[in-house]
Image (cartoon, rainbow, N blue to C red):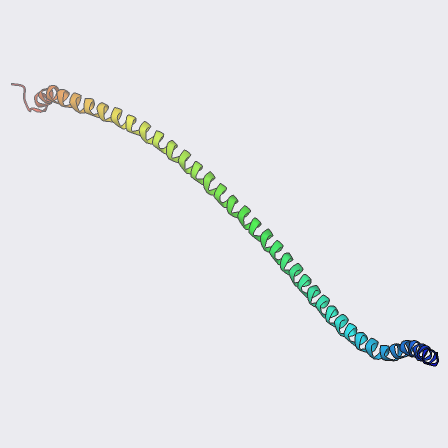
Length: 145
């Protein structure tokens, strides 16, 4: 019984001391955990700052890309307008060429008509030259006898 009483007493003492020991050792563990948590929190905050920097950079990059895309689209529009202008110029030149071809054809027809008329005049002049030359020969003589 004495042994039992003593064991019970030791058990009570141990039971009372155990929370005290845990409580006293806990601050060092808590301090260590607290320090680790503070370090982890600081690390996470640095990561958040880095992520924010990347997001900001990506946002700027996105804005640059969007700006470049806008510039490229404007460039495409201007080049399309240039192509449209070239097409209009080509159509105008083709129309002018067709007009000039028609004028050339008309002038060639007129030229052929003038050549034929000239040929007739030359032929008539040659035929009339013989008739007139006898008359001129007679009239140009000093005497008719």
